[in-house]
Image (cartoon, rainbow, N blue to C red):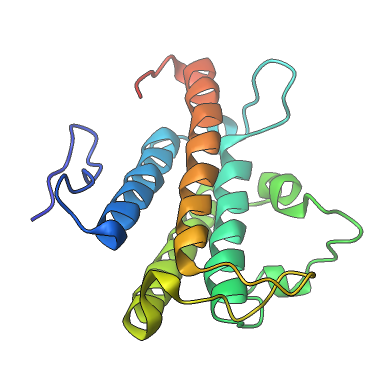
Length: 179
């Protein structure tokens, strides 16, 4: 049974095994991003703070890309999903961040939620096939292949870092604070 906090985020298990604990923390951090972006219109998702060009909308699109990149492309060796399959990454290596301004809040949320759903299914598949020691099918340029365990820890780090940015941006938009 999963407990939820006052913001609807699933609490990571206190007594889970390694995989359950890693997945619990990743889902908690995913839910934190969703909470920080909830209820905002295009102006709110496009707001910046201080000297940074980061936006909550850009974060949603970037993290959708990162989800697909690590769980679909790297872990399972799949071809890129739309919209990533048509991007000229050489022309704009930060396309995911920049192009978010052209998308509606609904499109950004759906893109991110769909990527998370795919990642959850692909993670479950990898856990069933090889556990946390399941190596990525697509190696890095130097030939090394991270295990699923490394990918999950990396994704926890990715969300934790961007959720710190999301805290600051959301507070600048409407004063909402909280972990």
